[in-house]
Length: 335
Image (cartoon, rainbow, N blue to C red; front, side, top):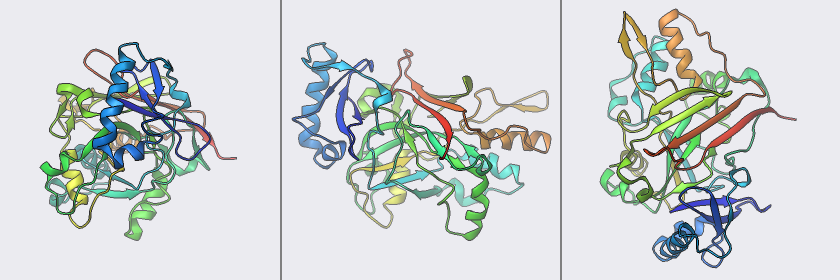
C-alpha cells in the first residue's frame, strides 16, 4: 500500500491512503490519524489500511479525492530517529579521490553513518530555505526506509524483517560547511539542514521483484533546473543493503518504530573509454560531479545550487509509473 501525510496546520498532519497510480487518496480517519500510530501498532492497523487501499484502487472508496503532492508533508513529518548511511562506496571513493585521500579498508566492511536532525523534515514540494549561497547548497538523491522496532544486536537478516516502508529522500547538504565540522571530529551538524522526503511511502510488496534482499533495483532520477543529471541504479552497486545499515545501528542499542534510515547518495561507477572515464548514468549530488571534474581536470567547474534553482527526484517502476511520487523543490533565500 501507499501512505502519505497531508498538511492540516498541525505538526504531524493527517494520514492518507493513496492509490497505486498516485491519482486519488482517502483519509485514514477511523483507522489512524498519523503514520506513527500505524508504526506503533502495525499488525493491528496495517491490515485495515490495506483494506482501504484495495477499495481505493478498485474505485469503490466513497470519499476519495484527487491526490495533490504539493499539499503533502513528509510521510513521517518528524521521527524518533534519522540515521543516514553512505552505502554506495563509489560515492566515497570519488569524493576522497578528489582530495587525494585513500579510502580506509574498514569502509568496505563497516558502514559510514551519521545521526541527522529528525524534528523538522520537509515535505516533497516545500522550499529548501538557506541563509547563504556561500554555504555550498547541494542536493542528495537517496532511498530511505522506515522501521518497526528492531532489537539491539539484531543480525542484518533480522533487521530486514523490521523494514515497514520505503521512500525517497533529498538529504540537503551545505558542502562548504562540512570541512570545518568534520575537522572537529564529531561529524555533521550545521552542514545538514532539514531533509525532504517523497510524498508517498510504500510497503515493500509494492516494489515487487525490484525489492531484492534490502536493495531496490530501480533507477533514481535527478533533474536539476529542468535538466536530467542523474539516472542512477539504486540496487546493484549498493555496497551495504538496508539490513546491514539497520544492524549497524543496532550494535549497541534498540531501533524503535518510526526510525528512518537513509542509503546515502545513490552512486554508480563510470566506464573507461579512450583513456578517459565517462559517467553515463550521471550523478545524484553535485559534490560527486565536482569530484569527477577534479579527478579528470584538476579542479571543479560545476557550481553548487543558487537561489531559484529547482531539484526533482523520482523513482519509476519498470512500467514507467512513479513509485513514491516526486520530490520537487526550489532553493530560496531565508528572510
